[in-house]
Image (cartoon, rainbow, N blue to C red; front, side, top):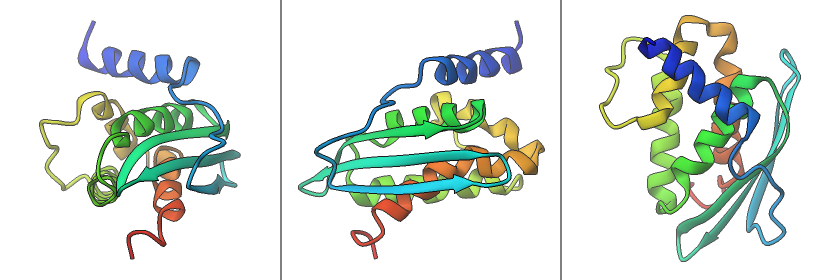
Length: 142
């Protein structure tokens, strides 16, 4: 098994059994995002307490890349300060969008999403949740 196979397995696992795939009744922030080209539609729920992202979840329908990316995002941002979560989100969107950016060593499972760099048409699928998180929390980080 090569590295590409491992990454594909990570994305398939997150698509089939996404983490934090639920609406959140006590969310302090939420936002809807869609990608009309692919049909992805998601709602991101965020609970922020004392400037800490206590919980992130999502609901909706999407392609495998969108669902896997959403699941990975919820795992990544939970527990961070809001400013760190926003910074990490912005950097990750930029990393996926620009192949010239050096890949950091601390991506963990997020590295599985780097394959979209070779397929620009799938970039919106991989970044929809991340953009929607920024939209949900926009009033907090302006």
